[in-house]
Figure 1: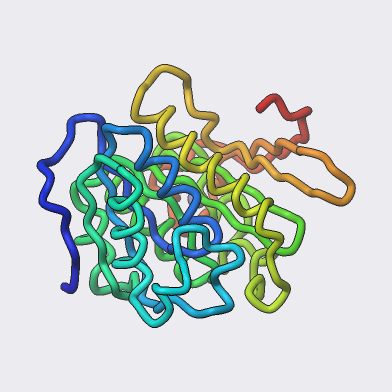
Figure 2 (figure 1 turned 90 degrees about the horizontal axis):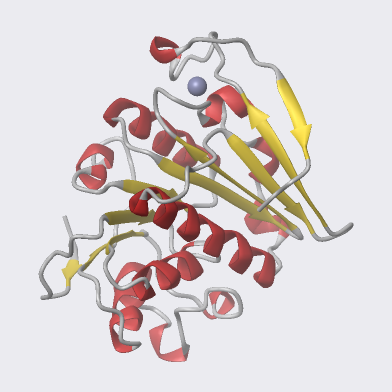
Length: 246
Ligand SMILES: [Zn+2]
C-alpha cells in the first residue's frame, strides 16, 4: 500500500482519516492539522491538476502532477503542522476500506462520488467507526455526523445510492468558499467528537444554501428498513425541519 509517513511519533489527541483531498478535504485536513494533537490519514487516488488549484487550497503550481495525498501531507508539514500524517495515494475501495479505517477514531467523507460515499457508510457501520458525511454542489453544501448503532446512517437518510443531490457535482461546479465552510465544519465535528466536550449532533443534516442564504437542520431517524444498518434499527423514518443553531 503506497504511503508517505512523517517521522513524528503518534500523538494522543486522536486520529482522523480524511477520504478525498479536493475542495472539502483540503480545508478539513488543514483545520485538523493545526489543532496540534490529532494524527491524520489522507486518502486520494488522483494527481493535482491545474483546474484544482482555485478551490483545493493545499496545492500550488509546483504540485501539478503529484499525487494529491503526498502533496497535501507535504503542504501541511511545510506550514508547521505537528501531527503524524499517513498519505495513501490510492482509491478507497472494497479491498482496502477496512485496513484504511483501522486505527482511526473518526473518518471524514470528503469525496465527490456516490459510490465511495456509500462504501464509507458501509465500512463505518461494519467497523463501528463514527464518520462525518459531507457534499457540495454549486452554492449548496451539507454535512451530517453518523454514529453507527446510535444515529441514522447515510442510507437511512437518502436511501440506497447515497445522496443523489451530490451526484455530478464535478460537472455542476463548486463555489470554493462554500466548500471551505463545509470542510471546516467537518473538521470541527471531528474535533468535538475527539474532545468529548460537546455532544455531536449525530443524524442531523446541516444544509447551507447561498442563494437564498440560509441554513437548514434536518434530523433523520434510523430506518428499520435500512439495508445497511438494519441490525441496529429501532425506529421509523419521521423527518422534521428545525431552525439551525450552529
Ligand atoms: Zn441506515
